[in-house]
Length: 197
Image (cartoon, rainbow, N blue to C red; front, side, top):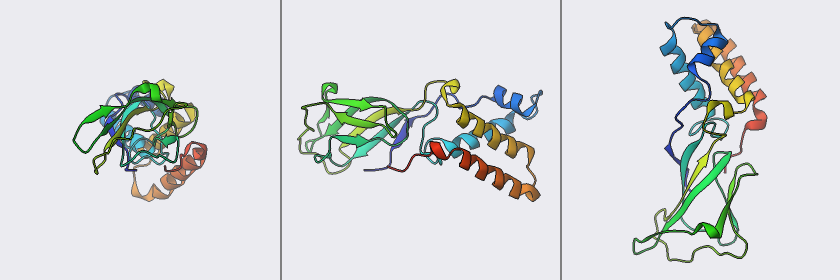
């Protein structure tokens, strides 16, 4: 299994500029660019590719490439919880023909973390002779929803804390304070961390 690739990023951040300014007590627009940058940094820290949680916060589209179907198993785990939906499963044979696997033969298990693609009862994996390089691609959507308000409150609160610390303590001599706060955020989010697939 290769690392998943995000193909469509979220259209909104888990916290908005207006909400962060309210949390910080900022009423003018002089710091908008700085706060927007800090929102991006906090989002990157928790979400998506390099996020420490192994989660997708706001809905985003991912591709998972596989070299073969798992004939000894009925399931394929999909990185970046929570799984919202599976869009398609496609595979390419040695002749270069791409086939979309009929949705009647598989289902999405969104009740577990991380979510999984599951064969339906009585179905079998496709048996085509596959090309050697990443012949299978699973397209899926991960995230809590399409808007910021669908992200669980503890995750949004953690972002407010990270952004607030970075905004209020920008001098080198308070680095220790920031590190301590980041550690406390990570401790508070322990239940949200997903083990790598």
